Length: 499
Image 1 (cartoon, one colour):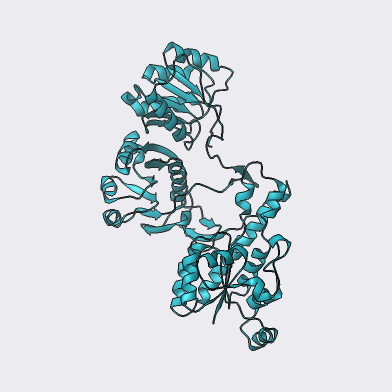
Image 2 (tube, rainbow, N blue to C red):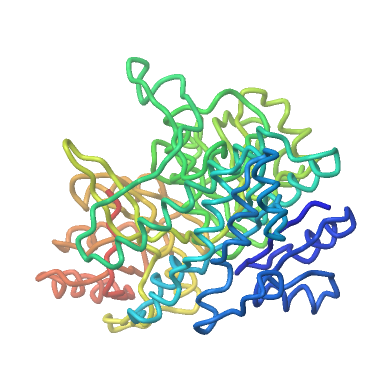
């Protein structure tokens, strides 16, 4: 009978996966916590310590590092290798399912101790994965629960294919390479940077037709944004940049939200009770710029939402899901790319940008740091309605290109000014787009006002409340203008440039 070794930290989907293996007459070997998990789920298995006749030692630090295990994994499909295993009383291991201690998540925690980080460096798991990946011509390796269905499907049809085994091996070596790089980076405060990326998409061209372009991913054979492309023309370089900007922006909001992006900066952001209302409000923010843009949704797109977009030329859409009926409606837009991707909080700690002869790295701006304290500095407190709009506007301004200004009514933008060399021009553009909707609206600025002129023209246009970081040597001048116009003003103490 075939044998599977199971030793996982992340037990997502493990019970169902293991049960289906047992139903197909697989023998399960398991270590420590995985063995206890299988026992709790009444699944027959054999503990590795019993199989090797060697107890776990050093508080569980050593449990799978044993010749009986690694020989079973590394044995080639030859008569000589199988003969040696038989003489030693060991069995070949055909499937290795292992995932690693959460080192990356551990070091991402604030004030993590060196000892805690070290204890989350996996040794045995990495050795098992590398051994199984090396012997992919016989052994299937898996660290990602998302691959369970594919493996089970192929087992049901006879055996896991050579192509799948090789694909999973490549994916595994990418994981272990990244894992080791993270450890080296953490332990040496000045580590060299190693990026392990795989080409997954050859693009027609770059920003312009005379430029070449490719998309790379941390995982081989993956698809953009970890999802799948449902329809449309081939994705372009510019599509992917705009989609990334839209996806990052829509992920900031918990309520149903729609973000429309054109040339890397949002031109419409809105939250509402449902996507239909959110879409209509986001489009109304700047319908001219929305033409030929990309749209991101943080909820499943229904046919009702899809029908609202019939008359708008859209390059791409991205959402956690599109209903069957929505896809039928959107199929009329044959060239529009639809991407279905998992919506989850961004976990990557760093982001990168190339410069001539080098690479910049910075930690990701996840929004205001914890314990940020906002301060009302004006004579007048914001009203409850203004507070609601200010909170929305402050979040909405963060993905907008600097200098960034957002004007909002309720939980929808009505004017956005972005990417200007000076802040007052960004304010003028936002007010021009808002027009009469600026009356009674609030304004958010991603950085302080160097001069009071921006506040003056906002007051003249009817803005009633402003939120910005504060910190200018001329803050008092801007505040005096706000007080004279009976505007509320809030300092956040946090800047959110996005270049």
